[in-house]
Amino acid sequence: MSQIKNEFDYVATIKKGTYWFPFTANRLVKANPEPRMIVSAKGAYYQTINGEALFDTLSGLWCTPLGHGHFKIAEALKKQAETLDYATTFQMINPETVRLSARIAQKAPDGLEHVFFTNSGSEAVDTALKLALGYHRLKGEGQRFRMIGRERGYHGVGFGGMSVGGIVPNRKMFASGMIPGVDHIQHTYNREKTAFTAGQPEWGIEQAQDLERLIGLHDASTIAAVIVEPVQGSTGVIVPPIGYLQKLREICTRHGILLIFDEVITGFGRLGENFAAQRFDVKPDMITFAKAITNGVIPMGGVLISDEIYNTFMSGPESAIEFAHGYTYSGHPMATAVAHVVLDIMEQENLVERVKALEPVLQEAVHDLRDLPGVLDIRNIGLSAAIDLLPVEGKPGAKGMAVFNEGLENGLLLRCVGDTIAFGPPFISTPAQIQEMMMKIRHILQKLG
Ligand code: PMP
Image 1 (cartoon, rainbow, N blue to C red):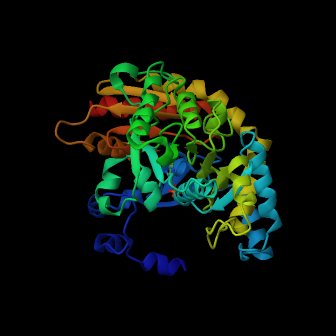
Image 2 (image 1 turned 90 degrees about the horizontal axis):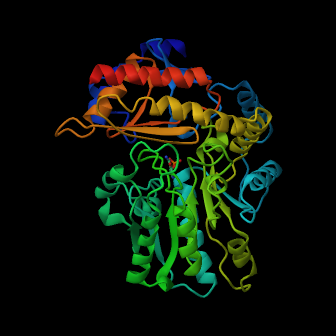
Image 3 (image 1 turned 45 degrees about the vertical axis):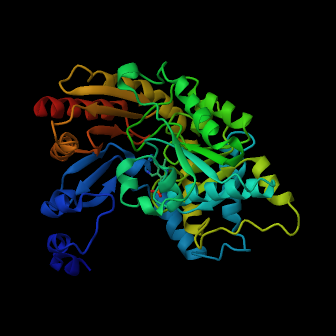
C-alpha cells in the first residue's frame, strides 16, 4: 500500500485535472497543489504532506467541533462496522437510530421533536422544503408553493437549496435550473450601520419588513415557507440584528407561512446553545442540521419538525399520499454510531458550556484587530467570527487569497470567502490557541498591509 502511495504521482494527477476540487478555483490549485495536501489530523491541528501543523480555524467546514482523531469515534466505527454496517432504512428500524432521534429531540426546542434523517445539509434543506409543500397540500392549501430565501443565504447545492440560496456566483451558472416561485428578502449586512459590532447589532430589525413586501407582491396564500440561516455562516458570519428573527417569526405566523431555520452550521452548540433557535429564543417550524452531529467524520444531516407539521402528515385521510421521500442512507447505522459518541462527548465534556466560556475570549481577540490597516468590519457570535478586508483595487478576492496563502505559511488553515476571513475554531480549543490564532492574523495583516 505504502509503496503504491510513494510511487503515485499526485501532483501530476492534479495538474492533469483528474481530480476536480469542489467549490475551488481549480485553475489556481492546479498551478500550486503541494501545500494543500493534508495527510493527517489530531485535535485542533492538521498535518500537511510537508510535515507542517495547521490550526483548524474553521473546524473543517464548521463540522469538527470536537477536533480530529478522537479514539472513541474510531472505536465506535469499528464496532458498528462489525455489528451492523448497513440495513435498509425503508420500513425497517435500527434501534440505535431511533434512540438517536430521541437524543436529538431532547436537545431541540420544545415542540420540534420529530426527526427525519438525511446525509448532508443540502439534503436536509431540500427535505424541509418538500415537507413544507406537503404540509400545505395536506392542509388543503396546495397553492402555497412559493419559497422565500434571503440574499447572501447559503442552503447547500441541491436544486431547492440553490434556489432559495442568495449567493450570486452559486446561482449564476445554473440560473436556468432554479425551482419556480422563489424570492428573496434582503440581507441584514450593512457596514455603515453595524461595523465592528460585538454580538448582535442594534440596527436592522426593520429589514424583516421586507418579508411584508414579498407577501404584498405575491399574496400570503401562495407562500409555503421562509428559510433563513439564523446566522449567515458561509457569507461571513452575518449576525441577526436584535429582534429581527422574532419579527420574521411574527410575520410568518400571521400569514400561515412556515419558518425554517437552516442550522447546518449553528446546530449542536456553535452559538453556546444546542440550537440558534434557543439562543435567539425564536421557535421555527423546522430546523435543518448536519455537520457537527457526526463531527464531520461521516456524513449525516436531518430535519427537526414541529408537532403541527408531523401531525398533519400523520392524521390526513387514509388516501393521503405518504411523504414519498428518503435516502438509501437516511439514518445510516455507521453515522448513527458516530453521532451517539459525539453527543456523549459533548455532554461529558460540557462542550456547549465551553463555547459560552470561549465566546468572550474570541470576541476580545478578534475585535482587538480593528485598528489594523485594511480591516473594514469585524463580527462575532458564539464561537464564530469574521473579518472583512479591504479588497485589492479591481481584484476582488485577491486579498483573501493572499491571506489564505500566508495562513499556510503561519500554521493556520484559514477559510477566506472573497475578502472575508471566517473563523469557527473547534469547541475543544483553548483560550491560548484562540489568542494565538488572532496574533497570527495580526502578523499576516500587518505584513500584507
Ligand atoms: N446549509 C447551510 C447553512 C450550510 O452552511 C451548508 C454547508 N456549508 C449547507 C446547508 C449544505 O450542507 P452540505 O455541504 O452538507 O450539503
